[in-house]
Amino acid sequence: MKLDDKLFLVRFNTDKLSHIKIIDPQVCLENDDRTCTRICPSHVYHWDEEEKRITIGYEGCVECGTCRIGCPHGNIEWHYPRGGFGVSWKNG
Amino acid sequence: MKNFDVIVVGGGPAGLSAAISAAQGGMKTVVIERGDYPGTKNVMGGILYTNATNMVVPEFWKEAPLERPIIEQRIAMLSGDQTIMAGYRDPAWAAEPYNAHSVLRVPFDRWLAKQAIKAGVMIITETLVIDLLYEGDTVVGVRTGRDEGDLGAKVVILAEGVNNFIAVKAGLAKPLKPDIVAVTVKEVIALPKETIEDRFCLEEGQGATIELYGDSTAGMMGVGFIYTNKESISLGVGAILEPLIRNHWTPNDLIENMKSKPYVKRLIQGGETKEYLAHLIPEGGYNHVPKLYRQGVMVVGDTAMLLNSLNREGSNLAMISGKIAGEVAAQSIQKGDISEKAMAVYETRLLDSFVLKDLYHYRHMGEFFEKNPHLLTTYPKIFSQAAKMYLTADETPKKQRQKEIIKMIFENRSKIGLLKDIKGAWRGLL
Image 1 (cartoon, rainbow over the protein chains, first blue to last red):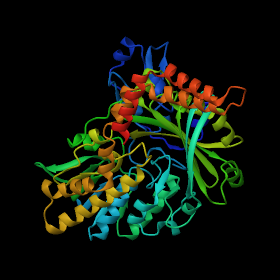
Image 2: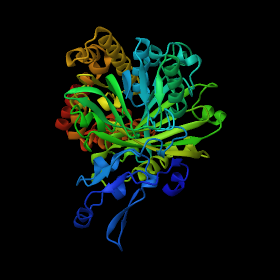
Image 3: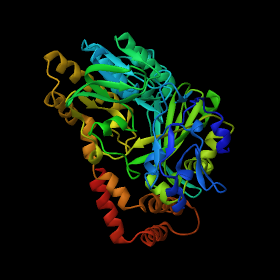
Image 4: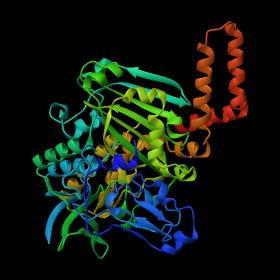
């Protein structure tokens, strides 16, 4: 089963505001490990080769917190979404 | 500003247990939860332990939305397509006083929150706590994300989960590092109840668990699990984040890898995935337990790193720590002393309980596995090979076969290596 199909099963109350930010985009240019593109369980982070930057699909964040801890450069500012927004599990 | 005796940050098992015991101690208590209602943000494998839950809500099994009482627990080691396993089954666990149940956290936590409300707890939902409120050095409440959202309290209990934002801001915890958290993904896979009972050899309503080591995590420090629910299976896998990063795995590839193993595949065949979930597990153990208290504050559950991964216990440690913190809050407020010294009673009581005793007992375990990454590759291989050689019927006399097995073991691990591992296991696990 593809990850995209699995993510369709997750329920979200999407906020208009993003709760995720790359602190310094230059760091992602200078380091090609791009750990966030692999460790995020819901593939929120994607390396855009044309624009040479990480794009963030914050709407699909399942709020585990892995990216913030796993970025070897400490370059991700990740908070919980505002109260009432974000993932809303059906089973848990 | 609205004032309470006790504010609990977070509506999971730890926070709700804390709120229940504080309210039972006569405190005006509020739980602040960021989800739509307690449960919608909450994930675990999910095994709930009877003894601890019963201490928070007596005879909870009569009403709570539980999945199945666990009567069989299996441990499997995967090595390629081979599996070696051990298990324990006792049908007596299907009846009172039980030992553990599988649960789904959304319905369970919602139910637990209703018990808190019955005990007099107020629950504020859809509200994120941003920070503690101070007057000088004294904690006087919390700041929430709402406009004019400051709330006053004599004691704040931090049950914010594994992501310990507020505990770090308060100077109690350190930021988490990739070597002490496991990233875990899980699928809830729907199957008819008769199919589940047939595949796991269960009487109607009974449940089973399987923990899978070795190739279930591609040999990385971690574990896979399969738990039976009423009409679904919770299947998941978690690995310490540091090796996951180093080995370039994605969490979804890891769960797909485990699902493709022959032994696992057949158990979930024909099932329909209903939800895909992810969560971090605090694996730091005793040496990474934060400072558990300061004046007017106590830290409980995952935020306090109270998790015993070897025995797959977490919800019970969370609930007992919450219950004790709620009691200490109530007693301190009644005595009119919410100083740091009064809060220290919480730590003393945790040290006297199995919660910190168990973590202390396993304090060398994390280091043992971290320094010996071969353990979850070499031993599943050795055990599987040994079993295969022992069980293969051919013309080799058994005496010779046993010699071959011993030779195979030493080919995979030297005598000195074996002795080191046994010594390490003794120190780390016993």
